Image (cartoon, rainbow, N blue to C red):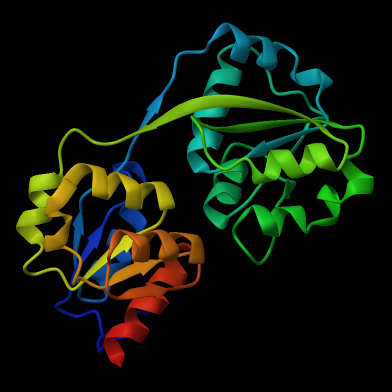
Length: 257
């Protein structure tokens, strides 16, 4: 049961996740007496299945491992696959992050390769299943959005694997939201940013008006995001553990000081 004396009580916390991913964190903040404001700085859209993507789906039987970079990759990637064919029974799946792991399990995958600690490409690459001896000569398909970090794929190629990318969704800067961000700035106690790209989108949305937000404490779930936020000019950046639990713990620790 949530303690009634949470340090979040009465605090306005701005959540910048895509709308489809903000509910659980918003509910956790509200359950502690906080006031969540969900203002996405990124939209997620399915992309049409290109000829190249369709060819990869048709050739899934030839792959040894499928990696999904996020819950969006799971949902949009599997939807595209299942619109054309069944998932190959022998094709193993892997991911990073508890949210992605739960999404795969909800889609019927009982055995998911994923790090138990750490929530980035470096953590994945440290797993035995991704060691040089394990991936050399193997074919790996990575389901992801448009662009993104290439560290995982590049490292797997260096370790002897053949890597293909399946772009199954697009991340875009929202058309709306800038005015809401500015309107809530005077009462916001913290701003939650959960991706480096989200920091860039925020700057793009506001332009020179970003100065209005720079004094608001920023809560980030990874050091890379923190570095991007500091480079954007945010004065107070608090790095937390990953996932909702890490963010909530970080928020409560910050406000209880």
